[in-house]
Length: 273
Ligand SMILES: NC(=O)C1=CN([C@@H]2O[C@H](COP(=O)(O)OP(=O)(O)OC[C@H]3O[C@@H](n4cnc5c(N)ncnc54)[C@H](OP(=O)(O)O)[C@@H]3O)[C@@H](O)[C@H]2O)C=CC1
Ligand SMILES: O=C(O)C1=N[C@H](C(=O)O)C[C@H](O)C1
Image 1 (cartoon, rainbow, N blue to C red):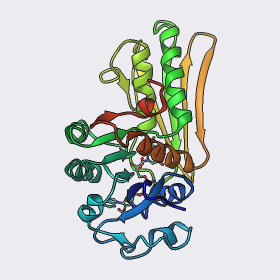
Image 2 (cartoon, rainbow, N blue to C red):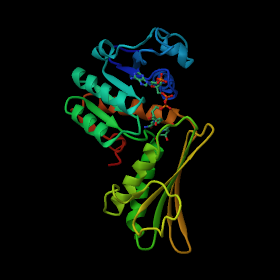
Image 3 (cartoon, helix red, strand yellow):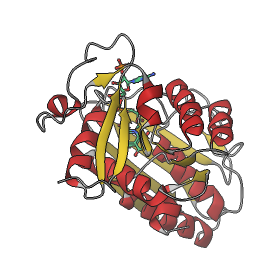
């Protein structure tokens, strides 16, 4: 049963894997309701009911290709789409002065700068992973990296995702890399090794390596390995259901409602900062 005070949310990319998972999640969470659903102009799903597509029955929200009128009547937007689309949606969310939760990964430095600029007017929560478990893992990784010296322990990050994923390393792997770098008191940029092939030479002390696996239907597996001489510490997270990301995104939207414009992280939302 929805209330007049419920947060009205628009799901962009409503027909996608996360879009449909979000529609189902919002349906079960008190205080939020779906008031709009957006897809690309040439989507075969335009005009279809977003609830029916997501398998929860008709919710009287047709999928539209025109974000502006939908954003104008919304309190927030949940966005798991593509980097270019998220930059565009950030501009519209800023115009409408609403909450924008961004789960999209693979954003360039330029994309992130544009989103940060939009966050002067919109309340933006952006994270490479919206789950409680991964954000707790990031805190643990930071602590472990701080406790285990770079001269004694090498940090490698391994991730596996389904065969449809288009970006690498995953947003989560990069988030965990940032946490490890913060624990070591250094920047990730310039210390990351994103792939290895051929005669690479020996490992550079203090670098953070990434390895990417893709296949099948894996929702998302991440391991941070701290490898010493004669011992290894491995900190891992295994996502079994996309609902963990969707519930985190709705939690972020409800948390951000009424907060002043700015760029926030899931660590802020979860009180783990
Ligand atoms: N932060 C987190 O916790 C998580 C992040 N993600 C990230 O979310 C993103 C989406 O993942 P996933 O759902 O698997 O991908 P999908 O490809 O299944 O879904 C993306 C959807 O967005 C649509 N879309 C693309 N551009 C636009 C646009 N301009 N306007 C409206 N709709 C658009 C796509 O349509 P079309 O297919 O027609 O192009 C598609 O339906 C990825 O970057 C992924 O890494 C995923 C899970 C968790
Ligand atoms: O594309 C996905 O599916 C996922 N993407 C995010 C990432 O890049 O880390 C989060 C999650 O692992 C699923």
